[in-house]
Length: 190
Image (tube, rainbow, N blue to C red):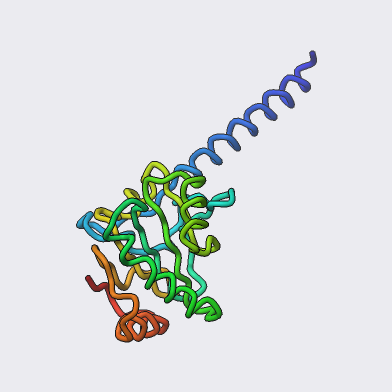
């Protein structure tokens, strides 16, 4: 092997090694949470990866600028508190499904995608807005502490509302508040 061939070979190996290190680093990025560690993720548009599973297969990265207001509801499938709240949340999600500026997603924490799919089919819950966080890794990284928990992000990806515990999804005031976040810049609320 000539010295030129060795340089080309080692250069190719070095380039491949740098590419693998860069890819590994990028995959490890997680957005920073609020400094007091008791809020949810402050800015979804900050970069990184927070993956949840789609029941039918595949994954979704929660990081990135939402297309409008993003209502992210975390729940536990076996919890009576969550079970009591979900029918009204599903009704609200259906009422805004044609509104391209509001997206409602429901994430089952601690559940496998297969179990979430079977549960959804058994309860008549549409699966297009349903996700699973099997090991609750994403829930922990995003700042979810107690289930059920709802995080609402404005169109810029900033956390504007966080509710720990059930919400009244049938209340007109809840719907008006969510629509009010379309303007952005409302500031964080608990």
